[in-house]
Structure formats: C-alpha cells, structure tokens
Length: 424
Image (cartoon, rainbow, N blue to C red; front, top):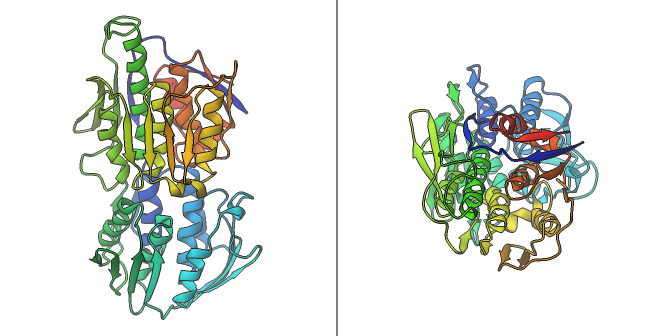
C-alpha cells in the first residue's frame, strides 16, 4: 500500500483528539494485571502495542505473538516470569532480530526460568513463571529504559522487593520516572534511593480506577505540521498565510501542563522553531509566534522518540542541527539512524551520524529524487515524521502507511480532518 499526501492549501484550523499515551497504557496494563485488577482502565490507547498487550493479559494464552510491539515483548517477558504457567512469547521476523539478552539475564539473576526457543539472545522465549527470590541486580544505565521499567514493575510483587543499581550514564530517565509514578498510582512503593539506585518495596499493588492521559509523542507531529506551515508562510515574505492573513491554529485535546510523559518537553523545543503552546482546560492550543532559531542543538537522551520528528522538521526548515543521546535509536522498530539518513537523501538532505548516537546536519545537500517514496521500515514514526514533508514539497509518497496503527491508528484520518489530501 502507498499513500500520496498533499498539504492543505488554506489556513489550518484543527481540533484533534489525540490517541491515549501508549507508554502509560502499557505500563498501566501490566500494573493492573499484577494487582489482579477488576477496575476499568479508561482511555486505553487503541494501537497495536496496546491491543497485543490486552490480548496477552486477558486470556493467558500459552503462545503469545506480540507482532512488532517491542514494549509488549519487554514488559510481558518480566510479567510472565512472575506469573504461574509455561508460555512462549514471540513476534515478527524483525522482533526476532531485536536483542533481549540484557533483560533475560537480569531476570535470571532474580531466579526467572527463561529459555531461548530460537536464536540465543533473541525472541522467541519460553518462560516458566514462578515466585522469584532474588532482590538485587545491577544493570547498565544506557540500555533501553523499557528493560529497566519491566524490572521495576515486577519489583513490588517479589517477596523481598527489588534493589536496582544502574551503572554508567542513565538514558531516558523520564521514562523511568514515568514508571515510578505509575507504580505509586497503583499503590506500590518505589523511589530513587540514590542518584543511580532504585528501590521497589515489596507489598504488591492495589486494584484502583485509572484514566490514561493523551500522547505527547503523537502531539509532536502536529507541532511539526505547524512549524512547517509557518516556515512556508515566511517564504512569502510577509509572514502571512499564502491564502491570506488568517491565523493557523491547532488544538490538541487531552494534554496537560504537568504531564508524566517526558516527551512533553517537545513543546519547549518547538517554541524555538516558532510554535507557541497555550494550555487550556481541554488541552493545548498551538499558534505561530516568534522567529525560529538559526541552529538547534539538543541532547535527546531523554526523548529519543522525538528524534525523527525534529530531524525531518529541521531539514525542511533549513535549520542546521546536532542531536546527541540517540544511542537507543539503533534498536528501535528499525535502525532509525540509518533509516533517517537513507530517506532524507531521497529528499536531498545529506544528514550524517557519529558514534551511533549523534545525528547532525550543517546544511549539506545532495541530488533529490524527482518522485521520492518514503520507506517506513515497519516503523510507525517514520511514516508520521515524513508525512508532513508534503507542506514543503508538492507532495510526499509514503509506503506501507498502515504502520501508524502501532501507536496512532487515526493519524491519516486526523490529517484529512485538518485539510490534508491523501490518495491511495
């Protein structure tokens, strides 16, 4: 399947009901299951990752296929280790190439019975759940925060709790903090006991009602759209919309100023690209304000899921950048560093990487393809980050656009609502 996406030719006024946070939904589901909860979880994300998690938790099947859902693989591996029964958990071919040894080794140190049902160090896994007697482990702080969160969430149901020591540089700390806040929301007790150590106390969880907040990662694409719209308007030389001086606005419903989500920091970074955020009683209202910076440098170790959004945006706005802290991008749905470089070359931008953790661009250009087609690599964020490129180009073609179902199933419909033209 392929979509051809064209931008609105009139000023945009959109009110978007964002999807619920996938990060919060998936953690809440695990904590709810560990609490043997009967209360309803409200506003759960309607995305692939969450659906496979719900399916796995509802029926306790012996064979669990989580497809391309990396979060589900990591969280369920820990959950199944403390849940009685023997189960095999697997996923897509790409999922079976994504390493999981760091997590399985940590769980084995706690006493988990986990076997590799295929290649050593990779899914599928055969897990025999039991009560784990271990209580103390060390883990490198620069691994995916999902490994850390998976361990923290089962900590409260271990007889002795869990003392987790993180060594070296800790990446994605906001995601760890998100997990700790949710553990406390569900009646657990967890805290940073030192700068690099976390203690989760034994005692389990309570069955509590819970409502999931909207997704700040999904919000980033609407910030991107408005930033690119503003850039095109500035090219007219008047600061006005090409179709008049009517103000462009986007309302994003269900977002809050004191969010649990680390990706809410994207609002501040986009303010440097000319997008103003006003909080309302319904969410946020985005407008164009100010002059974008001449250059953007940012450590994204805490917000790696926003990297694709900002890389594409800055290229199309002709803003040189240097983004560091991107080491986790190599083990996402695809190798996002390689994928970004390859697809941006199709648009004429020669982005470079350094040390497998830095993306930078000093304005270098290369020959652009006349009719570029963006490959998505089974990665939802590739599709969503590149679709707004149609604002700066006559149009953009996106291959396998259905991948957005992983986190934002209504993305294309929301674009249509905002005036974008999408042809199959």
